[in-house]
Image (cartoon, rainbow, N blue to C red; front, side, top):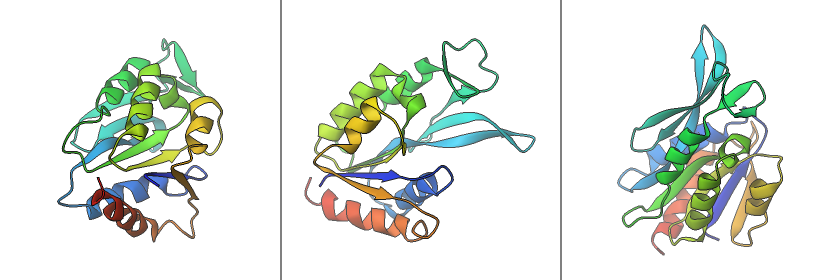
Length: 175
């Protein structure tokens, strides 16, 4: 298995586990991105995508009222997701890919879906968070025969970063 998928309820700790696993992989070149909340006066107003090399893009926001794409109360800048997807192109020197997340917002970008298909078919191992529910590409990814699907819960999340790092280290040597 070269793909590890993390799913679970919102707030279960998927993103935190992925970020901490990246910290444990010091000395390894990690590609990909994670998402973080944009908070204003204590309230979630949107989401930002942050690459592991430090670039950041505002992906969705309640104030993106003119956005053609919407998920819930958030306008989604699909052009931003396209730009994030460009960072996912398989390239020499990346030991492992960490992607947060394969979800409704991200899948609004055909560029993201295409980039993820290439990444998942590539030589480097991939750890990705994936929405618990969803059809289309979300369901397709979960059906991959080379993917291991783990459900993250409050009870399992604390040990998860070390488990992810160990899972990756065992596969990085094979690539």
